[in-house]
Amino acid sequence: MFGVCTSLGIGAMQLNTGLHRMNTNIPIHVNTQIIIIWVITLMATASVVSGLKVGIKLLSEICFLIGNFIMLIWLFYDDTWYMLNAVVQSVGYYFQNIIGLGFHTDAFAQMNNAPDGKSAPNWLNDWTIFYWGWWIAWAPFVGMFIAKISRGRTIKQFIMHTMTVPILYVFLWFGMFGAAGIKMEREAVLANITCDSEFGGKNSSASFNGLYRLSCRASTDMWFDLMESFPALYPSLAIISLIGIILYFVTSSDSGSLVIDSLSANGHPDPPRTQRIFWALTEGACATGLLVSGGDQALKALRVVSIAAGLPYTIVLNFMCIALWRVLQIEGGDLDPNGPTFSHDLFNVFENAKRFTSFLVSIIAPWFHIGRAHSIITNSRGWMNMFVLAFLFYASVALVILEAAYSGLAYIGAAVYFGFAGAAARTRIQMREDHGINGNMIEDYFAVLILYPFAALQMYDHVWEGMDMEEMNGTSQAMTDLPPKYGDTQYGLENDGYQNGTEINGGNKEAEYDNSKL
Image (cartoon, rainbow, N blue to C red):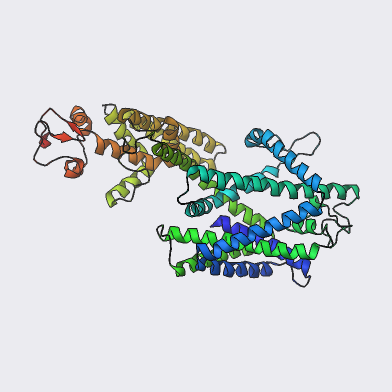
C-alpha cells in the first residue's frame, strides 16, 4: 500500500511540474497535485474493475510502447555512438563493482569529517536507503502480481522472462538517459552556468541554449530539462512524457489495488468489483493524506513513509527467502515435506483461547515456556535455566527503561537481550537435533531474537504435545504438572490405559502404561 502511495505522490508532483511547464497558468501547488492523484485514481479504478486481461494488460502494453518510442527517439536524435558506448561502459562498470557496491555503506562519509570538507553524509540515506525502502515496500504487491500472471510457468521461464530480460532493458534505459544527463551537466559547466544563473540555473524557467545545470535543479524538473535540449521536439516529447507518466502510475495503482483486493478476499482470483473500487480509492486517499500532511516537505514525508514501510518487511523477506529455498528443495526431492517438524507453526497462536493465553504469557514470561521445554529435553528440573533466562530477559527490559534516567543503558540492555536470545536458541537447537527437524542454528537464533514469544510457545507445545510415552515416563519428576488435556485422545492417549504393543506416535511400545501413573 505505502509503496504504491509513495509512487502516486511523487508522480503527482512530477506531473504537476510538467503541466506547469506546458501551461504556466497551472500552478505548482498541493491542490493541483491532489487533483492529479484523484484523476489517476479514477482511471486506475476503471482499469482494475475491467480486470487483468483487459484494462491492466492494455495499459501496460501502451506504457511499454511509449517508453520505447521516447528511448528510440533519444537514441537516434542525440549522439548515437556516445549513447551506445555509454551504455556498454556503464554495464561493464556495474558488473565490475557490483560486489563492492553491495557492501558499500558510506561509513567514512557519514562521519562528515573529510579534510577537504567535501563529504556527503546524507547521500546514502537520501538516495540508496530511500530507494531500498521504496522497492521493498513494493515487494509484497509486485511479488503477488508477478506470481498471478506467471502461473503455470517454470522457474527457468520465470528467471529468464521476469528477472533477466527486464534487467537488460533497465540497463539500456538508465544507461542512455543517465549518459544524456551527464552530457548536459558537463556542457552546462563549460557554458559557465551556475545554480544562480538566470537561464539554466536552479530556479530558471528557461534554458541557456537548451542547457540546464541539472545538479542544481529539482528532481521533478530534470526529465523535462532533458526533453528541452531538443527545442524542436520539446512540446511533442513533453506531451508524450506526460501521457506515459500518467499511464505508468495508473498501471501501478490498478495492479496494486488488484493484489490488495485479492489478499483481502482470502486469495480469491476474481474478487468482487465493489471491493476493487474500495481499495483503489483507498490508495488515492492515502497518497492524498501523505501529500497534505507533508506540506512544504511533501517529498521528504513520502520518502520517510516509504522507508518506514519497507523496514519491517525487510525482516519478513529474510524468512521468505528461507521458505522459498525449502519449497525448491521439496520440489527437487532433496527435502521430505512429510518429515519431522514442529508440532505447531511459528505464528499459529490463534488456534484456541487457551493457546492465545499461553502466547500472552510468553510475551511477558518467555523463560517459563522455554525453561519447561528445556527441562524435558535435558531430563532435569530446569530451574537454573529458567532463572538465567528470566534474569537476562527482565534485565534487558529494565535497562532499556532506565535509559530515560541514565544515558547508554539501553545499549547494554540490547547486548543483554542478545544473550537471552542465544540462551533460548540453545534449547531450540537441541530440540531440532533430538527430533531430526530440518533447519540450522542461525534460523533458530533469529527466530528467538526477533519473534521470541512465538518461538517460546512453539518450543513448549512441541515438547509437551510431541514427546513419546517412554520419554514422559522417564521424566515423571519434571512432568508432575502436566496440562490437564495431556490425557485427551487428540494426543494419542486413551483413557482406559495402554496395553503391550499399543502404537503411540508411530512407534510400538513394549511396556505397559497406566494413565493413573501420569
